[in-house]
Image 1 (cartoon, helix red, strand yellow):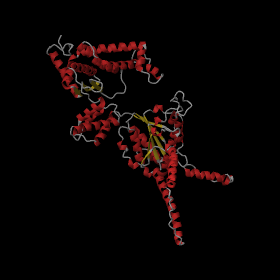
Image 2 (cartoon, rainbow, N blue to C red):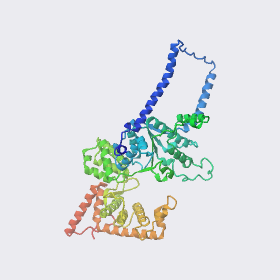
Image 3 (cartoon, rainbow, N blue to C red):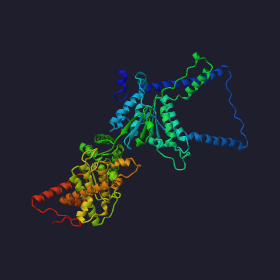
Length: 619
């Protein structure tokens, strides 16, 4: 037992030397014996005919009829009958794609940032490869179902391919939507055909891995979708996807050891003879062989699946694929840059750390797409490798959108620059934000923008941090009051963001005067209820949101009035360069701070409030 535990634990075992390889070799030898028997029988018969001097005569072709109609009519009938037979057969055919392990070039070395998931997967794969030792010597039941859940692009299909590559067994990929059919009952037949093909491959190859992509398309909770009004008794109303299809999937997941046709025929013959034999001379029925199968399902909506699918014996292990943390993103960046042309600048550890910090919430697919976009930027400029500036430019394009040239009037240009400078100054004074991009270049529906992020990777926020985000959102609105005497419509989206944050503070996080969570009210009503609307419809909560926003506006206005020199410096820099990125923002703020300190030390008069044209004036 200790030996088996040592074999199944630790790293990935070699399936060719374990039970899967042994079963594959036995199946190969059986096929050779069958082929030898099939070829030997006609060969012996031919030699017998030759030895007896009675060889075969060449068969003469029959005379063809002279009337073409007599030829075309049978052909037409054969075609029509063939189409009529083929249509229902094709409707129930399994839609899977079978991939041999040697066709898969993904290994566990290519899986980065998912160490915890990979460890669990390797352990599952070890018991799959050594299933006979695990069953016979340890008495265990190998795990036969894995559910991969997580956001799109987090590596679910990638890990499944790596498992199939290392297992050395056929990989049956199928999209759950391809099971669906316009013919009633055909979906269930397709599912049966899919599992039948898996069992056949497992007997021939020692094992098989099935992968069902987006399984929630056919396996949502039964009764979760109500039939259309007036169609409750029709086939259209009794949706096959929420009833019979789920039932069929549950049956197939529990019927891995269904005997093949040969064993069923043998047992039928045995039963026929046993009807005439005494009890002590009954023919022995053959038990169904163990089919070494592993079914993997992937979904972005695991909570919508039918609970019966998640019980032990079906998908009894759920593996969650989260977006990678900072250290995992750094490993992904190192791995991806090994495969993509780049300059020596991107080999610097500090720049790679900075990129990992900037890509909070990015999935592996998003990171790879970002670097591919940076390569496109470099190629467009006539270079064969990306540099740091190309990566930053690609970030602006992928995260913030493409630029849209717009002809501002001089006054509009100054208003937008002042507005964005107000956001940036409040974010700078908060002390917890990293200023990444400050721009007055139009992208999408936004005339300008401030992109900022956390200094460190955080998973929870305090009330003060949330209030700081509210104040940053109000920065543009307040600075327009100070600079021009009235706000513009450009602050409407900022007010919406500030209101939503304030509603969450009051109605979700219990950070106001009451601990009542209005999110609980939302969860008990129909899906899609707007939380902000529910908070604002509550008189007490609305008044508290009003007080919170008013207090934030007062603080922001006071901060901006005391730091107009920073607003002016950023505004002028934007008017001159249109866009400031990263360190450029910090440099402008530092220079403005030093200049203000010099003026104060030299007893110069500081800049007064802004006039309505947005320029600084002295009192």
